Image (cartoon, rainbow over all chains, first blue to last red; front, side, top):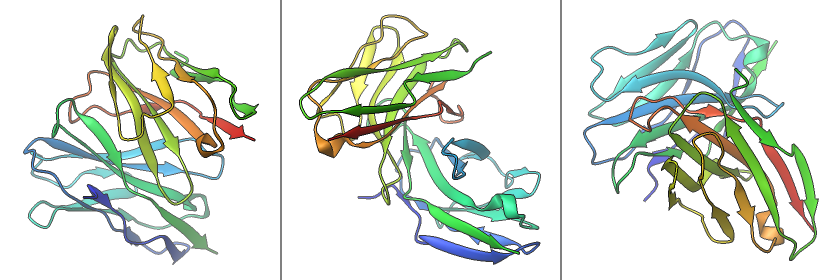
Length: 116
Length: 114
């Protein structure tokens, strides 16, 4: 069964608008971490934001926030005031301990394109 | 700190050849891992290591070999390259591999097998 699901292969957003990238996850481990990474066309993986399973508040990092809904097992990334430089692939990932050591599982990604 | 370094950046192999992708980190991280990235499939875990001398298989280990003799280095060996191994390979490291430990990625190696 897929542990991380990103259902939006591609998204468009107007510059300066907000956009939400969806991510749902599946784990039976009570302790886990959720991450979002950005991959621009140059190829490097850039860490954006982290949410722990026991965190009471949603994580925020500048224009990025993570809408964490534990009961629904969703961890959506919200980018406010989109910029042209936000055009990239975005990956949701989860680190959990099910099955032994805490491996990281990635979703298939969402390609975001910001329109001027 | 250089962070996570990978060599080479690009490589072309013929089917059946072997090679080693190098990965090194200077952050004293215990946890290191190798991923491959294919179009539409995200990153898939090949092998990982939780410390020197300890390695384990990930989701797609067939055709790859790893060892971890030092904390700093985690090379990935392709035993007999196949066209299906054409991919972008990323090495990553994190402090201990706990739930909240962020992974730091290398720049990637683009491998083509003809």
